[in-house]
Length: 204
Image (tube, rainbow, N blue to C red; front, top):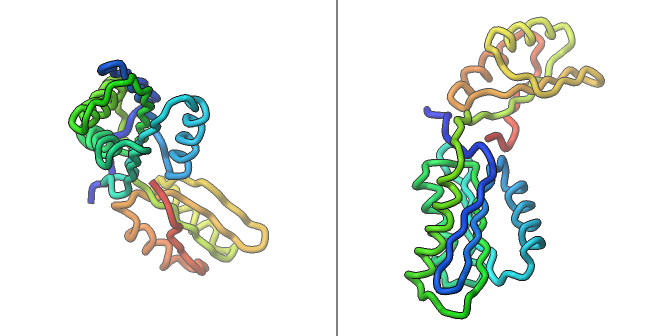
């Protein structure tokens, strides 16, 4: 099971002009839908005088979660070509917003598709790509006398510790690669004094 994939390293901007219309493309690396929606909301406020703020984003190792929005443009002429370019670059955890300033001349459906595609391509073509690993977070609940066994396994498997709490009950959260999730969960499940090993929603 492949759990590594590519994303963009930093933000980038592209510009495409056609018959007086100007298309400003903004590409962002994102980790979640909430982050993407927050960026979209902020960009709408910044470019409030533009008529269209079209976008697409893709999340996860297999690009299994995605969303597009034409924002008033004819159906499938804006969001889809943006998403197709994200897929063409074979990247995920990426948001691209294209802001259009209308120049007075209609471009037609094919013209719009080409414009949104070209603006997105211009932005994505400027960034460096980095590899990410798709992970899940597991929460391990255990009695205090099991702490040494739990920590020994975490260190042996080189897992990233992201949270720990020893107040009411002992809880530790670690990140696990998707491809190793069930194997690692099984190793914690059989440890003495471990009460529950739960895979948390989300991940990346």
